[in-house]
Length: 327
Image (cartoon, helix red, strand yellow):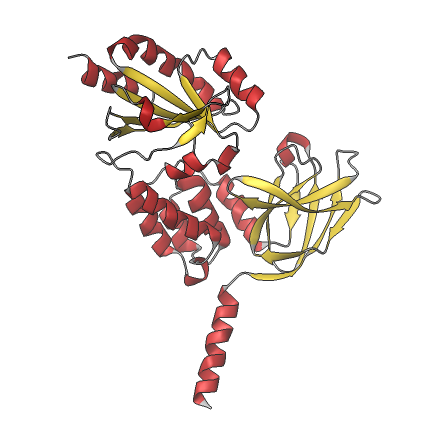
């Protein structure tokens, strides 16, 4: 009898700490638009995929889709644009959906996770460790660590913050991917060998990274849609003009989705070096291979493919190249 009770207690504990699949109780109204449909989208790897849609009737909509909660989803009236980020919990949720100004006027009621997410977004100078410690059981803590902090922290810092999360969060997709990222980043420290890869150039010709190493090569991750990347490109162009004849080369790795946008970005910014792209956005296998969670990002490697530095921007790139090549 004791074994039965113990088994039941363990089952109950597991049920209380794991995300569960259930039918949504999601209703809402649509304002500031004449859109006829509302789309429900699932978040994964910085992207949203449509999983259901409903027709708007008299300005209202309702979803009863079977989904896993608590979890991050998107609500949109146009799948071509960024949706409203919504953390859906089990239970009735009401949404006023307004596409104006990137859905900033939208209102979500009935989701504790969403309430915490809104608080997080409005908080200045967030201390991620403190936030997680205060909300260790929330999916929001796992998400923001994964989405907003993974590219700012060292592998050791990521690991320490994962340990602050409750057991209920350890099997989430976010934590699993963070643990994989830590493994990847530990293998990409200065002095380690940069991973080899092959990808097509703008003409579709396969280019192998290891066959294009001369002097010092900057493995530069960027995209035409990335504002900070385009702002940084003049600095990289200036460094290339100054040091190319002394042994500085670049291989641009684009996270673009459309070839025409990629090629136009290369031409508009005068990026006169070698370029490759899988045109798969954040599903890029090269970005995953290099643990790239935000762009612009880069690695500087020597002629043998050994990593010399990481994420050199602005004057840091010029200073490093001057030290290495002005001898």
